[in-house]
Length: 292
Image 1 (cartoon, rainbow, N blue to C red):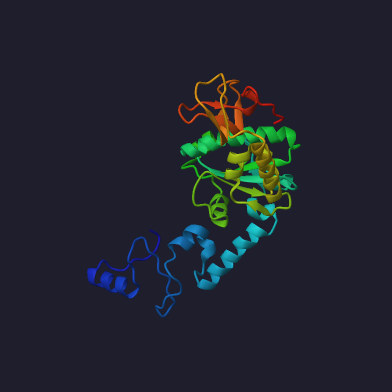
Image 2: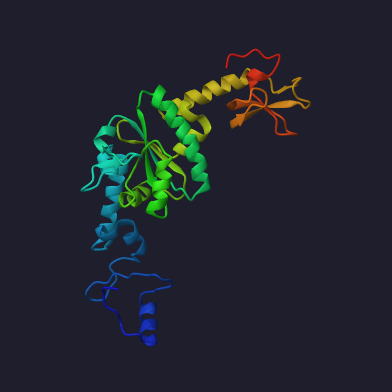
């Protein structure tokens, strides 16, 4: 440690613990010159903001939170994704893509790590949606990985399977973005609109439920999808008996499934068997005429 220390004295340690109400370690207590407290325990503040937390006062904490709010709500990608000395993000092949090139696009900030099995599963879903939107949305959607990998080697492995961009691993902006968007678990997907303002912090659920259909991920678009799905569901029978299967099949809403008849992936409505995990796409049920 490059700083000073009090002598190793159990009586003194006990007196300091009692005076400053230290009930856990590590603890960091900021004091004014007269020995009075400036702020509560600073561990979290310094973990979140580093040296920017100085002089460690309540006023400084409020200023930093206001800056976070401004970045989250202000509509400027540069403030979110760039820092002093770096105005770019990295492609999979390590090219530097300036943040300004992302202006006018819908951006997904993907918080994930290679060590996390749910992240690997969601990455596969997101790649499918990304590739589809790359064609149908005229390159108006981009994803930026905000890695929570444990080391640079894991980060490189993680990014190597992704077709999108990433914040450099050594960059503190990764931690800043987790704090700004209050990311408490991974995988998480924050969606930023073409105007630079946050559309949703729950992009993972949108992608999982609706896939590429959810683009551009606005409330109005989700409402359109849900209205159309309800209309489709209302036109379908609640139960069917199909010659291809011995048991009765019930109408069900499924995020994703593989039809046991055509072997194609399906989404949303399915006729499912409660007995033996059998699923049919509505189009594959004999005797139902559909335009789905």
